[in-house]
Image (cartoon, rainbow, N blue to C red; front, side, top):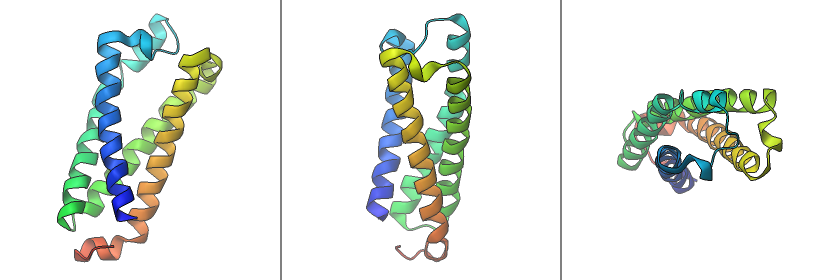
Length: 138
């Protein structure tokens, strides 16, 4: 399961980079709505997503190295993801985004993956906190 968690961290980092690269170069590919309010909402996320990416990178590095600080970074990663999930999900539900064709479906996949990632990382980290803190390999 540790390798699965490491894989999820790598995928999260790559998705984060890919999403924002596309958003700032050709947002029509992924935008589920084309209103100024939607653009303003999405443009409020890069710093929070950067924090998620940094936390995931540090979680990956410390987990691979068997450092006790891996627990901290895993919990930061899972918590940041859960917060971003909640913000995205609420906006999408309130604004009917999930029903807006391909863009809405894409958004639903992102939201679902974020929830799955966050809950998985948080529960695995907490269940293995003793091993993580002692530097043992879970």
